[in-house]
Image (cartoon, rainbow, N blue to C red; front, side, top):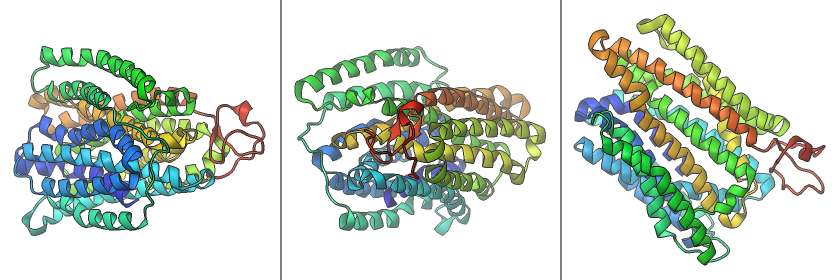
Length: 484
């Protein structure tokens, strides 16, 4: 939980300090995107591998290696002398997070029996909420305080004591576990999966500054062929020695396949929103990091409260309808935000943003906490690491894709409006345009959620374990519904 908290805080804490980094280091807009997208891309590219390495060599061992590397990379980020060094350090940090984070879900999955797992995932959701609350506030305070004249750098250096604490706690309390049967690392699969991600994200992030060159479209056009080759090789690898990077049989489990699709699209939505939101408040409205950071407190609290409520009370009673309601509620908050930002324009104040942020936070909380339990509920124990790596990978891949799309849905609008209207109105219009895109993605999420299992069930004679999800309403029958 310490590691999960540190990873989430690191993502949210960075967003709020981006304008300060840009001013201090003279970073371009593409460098800004790479500071966030680079981490997400390295994270996404390495997560499946990290999960599989944990299955092979031991989840505790990989967790400890990952948290050590993450702490060292955080120190390098804090000492970065230029944008290039910061981006490189963020790439290292993301790759170390890829070793660390999938072990968290895998360790939960193999340590706790099914009837206790829901409670642990509820705690996991609360930690996510706490990280979301404390990240922006910590980032804002550390940036505003300018400790020892270091400006934004303490947002990374604060990871050092947390990482050391996680290393000590992990080495003492975590029990080692591996996959029951011997597995091998699929290096060809790693190369193909990483190449496909890079070929998609890199042109999206760099394209606008390079006036959308032909090579970018060629690269993105080749991505489906790379992933087709990846899938073909994974099938061959499964037949050859049973050690593919991605266990394709997992996608035959309806709950897992649907949940992965939701993770991907939800990652796109959050990737776009959080970066654009920060730039709108600080560069568009001219707010300080502290003012922008504290504006997000109602949102974060709403996420945390709704996450706990959804797992403990709502999902056991209403099943997937809770997640679908979350998508609709979050979309409603976005539409309210678009309307209010247009009504008040440059004069908008933080308290006027509270209503849409609370509505959005409730919607997000209804989705994030129960989703992981639904996705992992029917996954065999021997593939826990691979499955949790896939869950995180698709979320981070969506996040990196969303951050790359910021060039298209936000900066393109800002560039068009900037010369004539100035930064304020340009950033406002870009913000509203991006939010319409996010609302559209949430419509897709709502539709995909209809393929999730309908209910969480437990009952005598029922094949599902406690805490598992039934495929449909009829299958759930009169089974006793219990709190997760």
